[in-house]
Length: 564
Image (cartoon, rainbow, N blue to C red; front, side, top):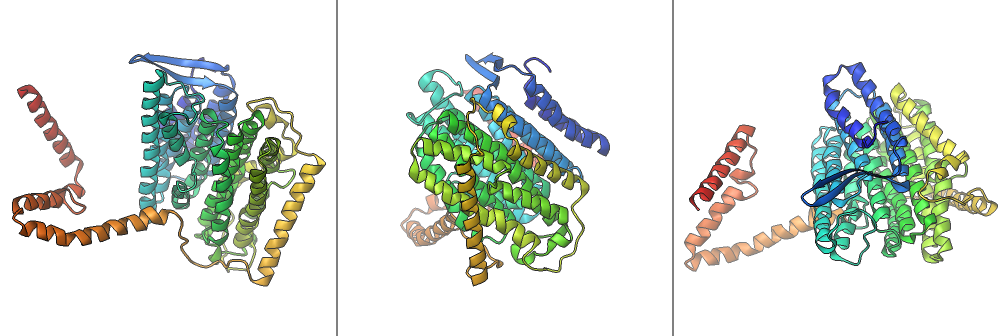
């Protein structure tokens, strides 16, 4: 253990070394970096370290406490499991991006001020997009661009909020912020974008299914859970979060049921599970925050397991479309078994991790008498069994024989899935080690008669409903289709509206020309030809051309300064 060393620096420092190493050494470093980071974390004392004073500001680059510690533990664990899963991959870009992404996310956990948080916040956005672009397809490139724009927008809003917060308070400490000021609202929206709040959520379902097989596993871990941590740190107890969280748990169920792409199903399911955590933050009590941290810990593992299993299916079968799959248990029995464990965990079956974490949030919600939220969470618990607990394993591995025959997943994938499945079971059977590292002391017993019976009733009735709907032919069929969500507003409706507006104003531009304003109109037309979507400055240029352009602009600016 090195005093004052942020564990993130170990992963970030390993990234530029990775491409220089031969294959075997590269794999060793991929595994060693998160292990060494974890060992460094466990040796750090609680408190603030790594203080930097510059420009009249105090930057806290390393702050360890109960909340950041539990997230730090699971982030390192997920980085290690993701590295094991990707050992068979020989794409250096993915490995470097994964190390930078996970290292930046870990660094953000331990940021004690808003500006340090911003640096790591934007680094996660830039690094993670390469896990989408590494798919090397045109749809992946376009999805990555949309993802990057939204993630960078979140960072810009965080920076703006931090600057306003400093102007209002004279400080930049990242503690409870609240919604009483414009700065708080800006920062809240920045966190909400990454947490996939309703109407801000479509980047998740748009981008994650386009990621690489191993990249999507890593993507499912860090961005949204970092946002959950940030909300718990800055906005615990804000009642609006209960409303937002309740909506988040409910609406993805309906989209997931009709979705054909199983990685998109898991993306909607991720949105649903985030809602439970947001409700826990909104409740704001010690039990609510403990429930959020515990559920984030469990969710990272079982959601990664589900994405791992679907990634293995995509890797071997070449598709994750439910309409094209079925009967894969014959070819991939181990993957099918691990997928079932992940599905049972997310459905909160007793003796699995989801049960011992989700029940804390439900108990905290009931304890504070938020009965409407409690009932919606119960409904959402039943719904998640339908789309992630049953639909994902059933349509991919059972249902019918699609005729696909393939090899079992590679050994590295099986080891990662096996280790993750073991953790899902171990936490469910013996939750005490997880409860011991939660931010506040835990006096909660998940395995009471009422908890177990209530959950089993919920699960059994949900399974019965699925069976009846399937037998009656009422369950939405798995067909090749594209389901429209709120992203159709900014991907289709807004561009169409601008196109129609341009067409409608074309006549007015001609009248403007005929009215004797030809010089002004010609100038505007020239600027459009130069700067428009098809103009010269919108084309691709070589690096040398761009460098000369920047140098020319710099020389002109220098000349103006010298003359003035």
